[in-house]
Image (cartoon, helix red, strand yellow):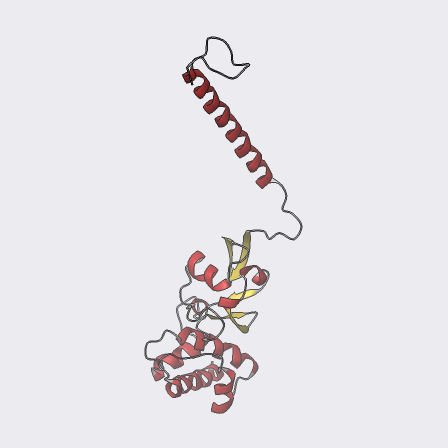
Length: 208
């Protein structure tokens, strides 16, 4: 195609370079318009059924403002958004209990609970058990005294499950406590020592 072979309607005196520059300029304007329209759409009020991303959670007695995706689990939010890494991720499918936290004093697997469903509820993680002065919770103290762990990866989940169970049965038998925290697994399989530590924690809780 010669330099002067342009489509009908092209201004006279334009070179091929002028035409190319004009096309590029028109594309840039169109793109800018598209981006502007997109930003306006994002600024609109959320559509019915959509989920607000910036939410407030009550975690360990504090109001925490956090940006949360609608499909995000509570375990992910606690660990990676709020830095509360005492909540462990083991199986990530409600089998091991390492991610156990208390929601309104009831133990829950945080790996299988959407963060948005915890709005307006009281969330307590392992970091929230000790007092403001640093005194350990009786169940934590029981673990220390009985050295109820090996690798300790599962221990925060066992402690949270035990604390929740003791709220409904503060004076359990060893068998009752074993059944009450049976939703938690230990990869080291040191269950007897863990149960001894939890029973010590129950005893200390009754004294507190």
